[in-house]
Image (cartoon, rainbow, N blue to C red):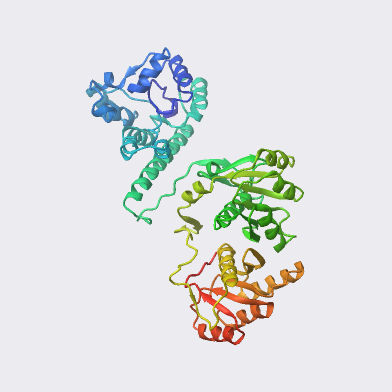
Length: 516
């Protein structure tokens, strides 16, 4: 007998998420399939008028230990695991009066929901670790030819339709697909539980690193139109889209980059991003002032870019930015009048973000490489105050120090090689992503000239050390009087000497911020 010719006679249903379960169970009952269930699910289905056999009646053993043990019984697992084309298995089922269980409908205790719920105690969380459910799912999925495992309520209707069309049978291709989904479900569940316990033993990088995330949404395409893409995880729970067309793959990456940058500042700040690199960053007493400063850095590149604000957007600010084509605006809040105005452009995406939630959500940076993943702690430290030191004869003035630290905050978020020219409250020119640090500096200077920006008296930040004095001298020639860089080159003394010769003040951070 082939499994796809085997008519399902008996189903075990045990679900925490009861979405659509009544209609599914009723449809199974109408096909003549016997329904078995555990305590809470049995009571729920019975109250809806369905004839249900309790698991405890089937096993002849009561649920014990406050429900911790109810399906962990040979009669259940033999029914799930028996190969019905195996004569020895058939004989043993008959000898022990064990019925086969042909369909398993299970979803697990709400561990993730309990973990996310405010006020959940450690005891609450631990008690919502499902034991019997995963054991049954794994058993049924292993024996998929004879026990179909349905874990996702979205498949109830499809499964029922197939049973109705095939006289109570399920094709093998469907069974194996359901089995795969069951194993994905238990693997994700166990990964979430493992991550919770890992936080209690302070193990950031375990021997076995499991990626766990639920599929969020299918994107129109990936980085390019010929690439498919899906968004996994909790991104849409952190970034709430209030208006505009669907986010693209590249939008999502830029939103992440812009938000991380603007979070560096406590005072009102604006960051304008294009292809993950900042076009301009500004701070001020209020957002309109900060925006004008950020926009002035580069008045061309912001068109079609991403703008992130770290304070609520009001109507006056909305009026200022409304005339410019931007892909995405990000803010912790859009005041009602601002929202009404900005919604007038249907393609503009408006994203509301809770920066406190975002900070907590940034745990690991993960990148795929051929055959594996690179995993690191996020670059969430700006500098080590104890390591920060002036290495030149001239100490910085208060304004020079402020300008250096501002430039350093921005340089942390610019693709290497990064060169950032800045005043205490704004970027003046940015050179990003060049193979040579000198080229990045040259591009930044040229962009400043094109924008009519005078760099005289500014500070410059470099995300890594100057390997030679030529990079520093180029900055001096452009007008920089203060330099902040990690230091650490074998030619540091040569670079310091060049700075002293030109009366430049320079600080070493002892920390670099490569961004690949």
